[in-house]
Amino acid sequence: MQLGLSTFGTGPNTGPADTLALAIEAERHGFDRFMLVERVLTNASIAQCAAIGAATTRIGVGTGIANVYLRHPEMLALAAAVAAAVSGGRFVLGLGPNNQASVERAGFAWRGGREALLDTTTAVRAVLDGTAGRAPACRHPVPIVWAAVAMETAELAAAQADGVMLYLATDERIARVLARVDAAARAAGRAGAVVERSLLLPTFLHDDLGAARAAARGFLGFYAGLAHYRTLFARSGFPVGADGSLSDELLDAVVALGPADAIRDRLERLAALGLSHVDLAPLPVGGEDLPGAAARLFAALGPTGVAA
Image (tube, rainbow, N blue to C red; front, top):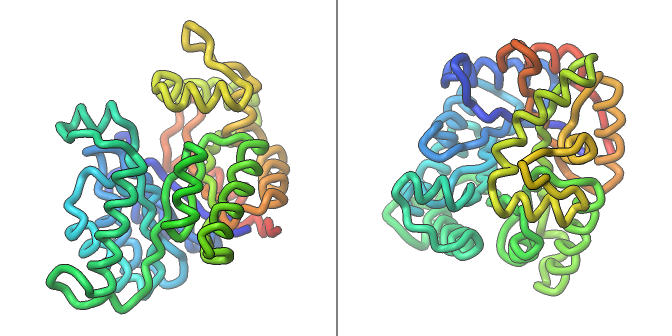
């Protein structure tokens, strides 16, 4: 299991220059890749990935995810080709729809997550391989990986994409999703083709467990307000309270929190599940900012050397 770093790229001290500096530090500390979350109309993940690819030499770089609603598929493919070229083939294109509320608030018509993922993937691949559009074929392979919260999305990704990116999933759910992915890939004649099986893991590193949980509870409050995540939590055995409250058990199950030793133990358990990558997303605890949280994570956990 490879260990990456991820960032949500939000906050007063996490502009493009700060994100680039974070990626360079991640490479220096031995992380395998650097993945950028893209929130609707908040940050341009592929453009930042291209800058990171040009400024680094070894670390993988990718989107976790780029939103399929925000760009014409041909423009999405052209941007991905730039990121692949300047990184020398280190770029991974993670795709996802974010959520209906954010997409519609930005003025786009929602037509479903899986439909949008499938249509976009088909169109992007055609441009990258030179069979559609006006650009020559991309010289580097660009793996296309889907964000997959729902089981049905993960199964479709096994048939149509190069992997799945999981998020806010319990260990038990990860095991079930990966089993379904493997079965779906075999049924589609693609056994072995689904290379990426990754998890984005929000990480609240702090010796004070109570402070770490408080930060995690604040972070997850946004997701508690989204219907599909409330369903996910309930199906995982941790329903959100009627007042939006989140139990300690839910926090402990879907993020990494607490002292470094506890997070290392969590990574070892995840490695045993068959994940190809875990991408740690350092998040602030208490009054610190994201660069401060990342610096502490680098010192405590990078590189960890966790391997399956």
